[in-house]
Structures are given as structure tokens and as C-alpha cells.
Amino acid sequence: MIRKRTAVRLGAVAATTAIGLGLGVGVASANTTYPANVPGCAGGMVVSYYSGHDHVQGYVTSTTGDSCSVALQQSNGGSSSNWTNVGTAKTDTLLDAGITSYVVVCNMDTGRCATSASY
Image 1 (cartoon, rainbow, N blue to C red):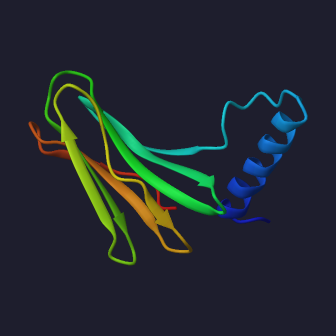
Image 2: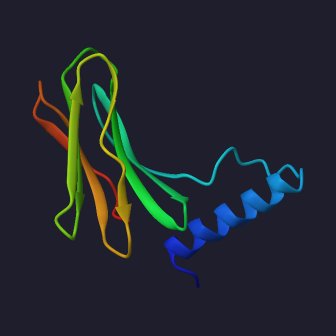
């Protein structure tokens, strides 16, 4: 059994190799998304592998005009947050080097929140 991080890395290597060889793999990118949605706010965390490291970024989209927030948290104390009531807002992209990362998405008008799965 391989770990999620290894699977993401292997997927990135396979996609890069296939693209470099001109082969179609049916995958647009090697990014993995961990959703966190509440009514009025669609969000989550995107994990990307590039430059030899995992990177994470949170995002949230207001789907109804409500005020929505996203907070990216890491087990090493790293964090970034943002909010929007129109369109999509993103957090800073943070390095994830063997730590745990997750996002909390909240609808600030209703007080409802959701937490993504950890990576």
C-alpha cells in the first residue's frame, strides 16, 4: 500500500513523462483536491507537486453572494486565510514538507463551517 503523498508524486511523474512523450493520460494535471463545502460556499485545498516539493493552497467560492472564508492550517504552525463575497478567493501557497495541512471553509453569514480531509 502506498501513501497518499507517494501516490500524488507518482501521478505527477507519470503525467509529466506521458506529456513529455506526447502520450495522452486523460488527466489534466497532477493536482489533488480536498473539498470542504457548506451551503453558499464551495471550497477546499489543492495539493500540487512541483519543484521537488508538495505545495498546498486553499480556495473558496461564494456561490450565493454570502461572505465566505477559507483558512489553511498546518501542523507546523503555518497558516494563511482569505475571504470573499463575490467570486473566488485563494490563500497563499504554502510548502507542505512532511507536515499535516487542511482547510476550514466557513459561511460567515450563517456561521456554518466545514473542514477538509488532512493531507
